[in-house]
Length: 361
Image (spheres, one colour):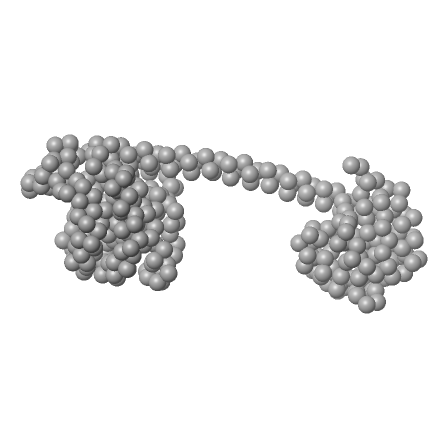
């Protein structure tokens, strides 16, 4: 479209200026003359011009009142408005520019000046529109690329978790269920405002995803220990207790290659700390109470619960009721007391999730 196809609304209560403005502009633009602010607002419901020339001093509605209406409406807010005024006082110009006008032209206006100002502002608006279109196109591409990266990230997390589980078919879908337990717990914590100050800055999605890697260190544990059909002896247990260290080392190595991935920060915490106990009797460092990161205290509940209700090489599965009883017995010793109470309150939902193991492994 050329400049001649652009529509301009000329708004003035004085027919002399309407006729004068139209005669100046009509060779280059489609000009619609409008005698009042109210009629302008009505016209804008049907047509959106490229630019509005708006008189300031008008009866019923002043130009300032009209521009307020224009800028408050998302459908018209982007239309450039140039004020036409017989007053050249600096404070009036400032008031109009503050309200969103792009320029001021004093009446009586010079034909050449009017044409040049309009040409300039239409060019600026065109460049603005092109920039906005480019930004929107770029945003779509960035979103698509981000989705690709997120899918790759999810695939890598799942692949790493499945590598560990692949060695022990008895624990199939363990990490998937643990994610669901954690999501339940996160939502309940938010609803009950439990530890809200501590968790308010979390990336919840990244935290939930990272839980898949909590046992990644087990990939370094030998099969004769990991898959032993029976209880571990003291020596074997000490070797098993090394898997949090192995997980930390593996994840720190990955972080050195792909820094600034916050899900790896969560994964490192969960891998290294999910066997710590509230009373300090856990491992690897015997942390106590709130010394244990909140994410790891949550993970301890989800992980132990699923281990209890699942069949393992060294044990048969406990019933949901027995598992919840064991969790309750660990309140204040193994587990954070407040989190335990909340976890117990989620018993029906936990049972529904854990029951999937019967069909999926």
